[in-house]
Image (cartoon, rainbow, N blue to C red):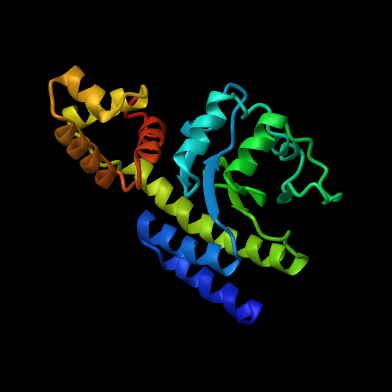
Length: 240
């Protein structure tokens, strides 16, 4: 497909998405078109942030990667984020040891973790919301590095994607769906790392009932999994 045509089609589909589920479905098409594996949208870390999970708004990266990333306290060690304090330009990397163009000094634990999960190359694109907040859109894969034309095209598609995503985000903040007291209770224990079985024991509920409460909460807040639900609930100040 001609680059201009592909960019127009994907950008149009992203702009037409009305829910997060529809948005992520189209982002899946973007990943396939660029031979990528994962996309993540997360808030820019503040000076007191030490964990990645609470910052993630949407992601297809395996939950276990995020857990290990945070367990090893790697957010502060990431070599890409400091670069984005001084520039608005996208940052690209490649973990191929033969790639001499990469100038990021990866901590050994982060390098090993990314390689284990197949996050061998990628891009981090800074985005600014109209309400003044800063976010990043990250793409990961195990393909050859982007050529300049691909970098430019992906950057434009990412701008269209974030523009619509941010509209949905601000709408959610203004009109969050109300969770029941029991759903919030289950959510609070989930945020503390408890499993469904453990929460059931604490609240005298079956794990099936706990999972039902979680499913309802995930649907109400338009999330795709528990990790995203907890992160969104914290961001909406539904839980601490």
